[in-house]
Image (cartoon, rainbow, N blue to C red; front, side):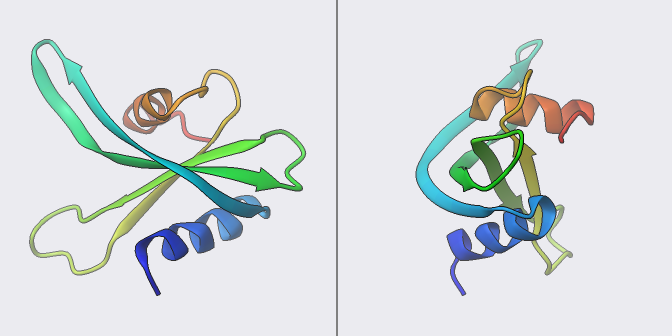
Length: 96
């Protein structure tokens, strides 16, 4: 299974909706001159979700010793209205 399909499965499991991949967006979050997160956020259109039309998702490996990818998903509900806002919500613990 490929990366996008893995994220789609995670979105399905977390949010109970069918995700359709629509784009990949590079994101760099900088705080006080330091890069605190940099990567690509995948944007999915949701079918059948009662509150959100979009979901943002990405995967990463927490460290060199971890073999299992950690996946983050964030529904596109206020204040999450962009890939950057999804990353910021994940950093502050506000992912839905």
